[in-house]
Every structure is written in C-alpha cells, then in structure tokens.
Length: 216
View 1 (cartoon, rainbow, N blue to C red):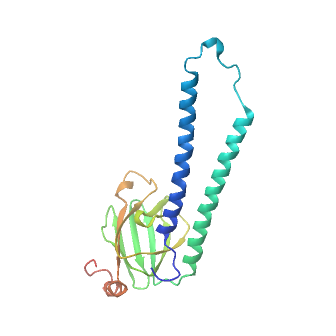
View 2 (spheres, helix red, strand yellow; view 1 turned 120 degrees about the vertical axis):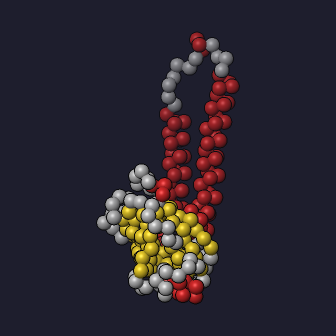
View 3 (cartoon, rainbow, N blue to C red; view 1 turned 30 degrees about the horizontal axis):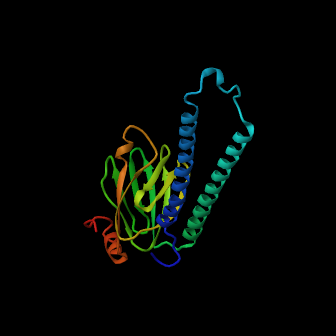
C-alpha cells in the first residue's frame, strides 16, 4: 500500500473485532439470565406464580444500556467510514474505472484507454487494476439498486440508479472475487466478477492493448 492510503480491510477488521465480542457478550447475558430464571422457578407451584407483569426500573436500565451500546458502535462505524472516505478522496487516482451495474452484468470502462469489459451473465472478462495504487471507481446502475462487493477488501457499496457514487480503493497483488450483494432479480447469483491486481507496469502494458491481451 502506498503511503497515505487507508486499508479498508484493516479498518473494518478492527470494527469486526469490536462488534463480535459485544454481540457475544449481550447474547450470552440473555441466555444466562434465561437459564437461571428457568432453573430457579421451574418448580414453583402455580399458586405462587408472580402476579406482576412489568418492572419499569429493570426494563428502563436494560433499554438505556442497549441504546448506549448501539450509539457506541455507530460512533465507531461512522468514524471509520469518515476516515476511509476522507483519505481516499484526497488521493490522486492512478486509474479511473467507470463501473455500470445492470441486470445481471457489470460493465467496467477505462476512459483513459477507451475500452470496456463485461462480467456477469454475458461476459466473463476480469477487472484489472494496478496494485498498490489508488483506483477511483465511478459507480452507477442502469435499472435497480445493485451492490459492488469485494469480500477480501471488506468493502461493499451500493450502485444506485440515477446517481454516481465515487469510491477509491487500493489493492494488494492478487486475485479478488467480487459480486453483487444486493438481491436484484432471478439471476442475481450470476452477477459476479474477478478483480486482478497486478504491478503498475503490467497493468499499463495490458491496458494499452485495450483489454485484448491475455489476462495478466
């Protein structure tokens, strides 16, 4: 990764490491309380059953604690997103790719080189990008809401009809499967693509063939 860039994978892995323990803790607390209550009161005769049906102080405290936890997680999430977006938007991209989503196809256009590739139900061409450099994606949709998702980068962004979403990502070298993560119809599962992150020199040589050369 080049200096100044933020790794979406590192940022969101950090969030994941906070979300999961809190979720496990809340779930475990609920289970423990339920088990304890069942064990203590399982043999209570019907005539000794409690006549009250609410406990406002306990319920209020529980609601406030959950609200605080939710507010804390929202703060961490929006802070991470702001940090990623701020740093990414300040970067001068090495290459710009216009991403157009449609049922059920991705179209990747390289305006600086004058060609497009397709992947999904019709095409099977890869998205090729330079590794270690900022790549700017202009993301839009022709019909319904789709979602541009690259799991290995921990990154997902909606493609919205009538709107262009500008995102900047940095790839390490490798092959990264991607797909639409928003259910968009009967062939949603076929709306897939593969990103190949190669050295900048290899990318430039490939792009100059207008995508007709072998997949690097």
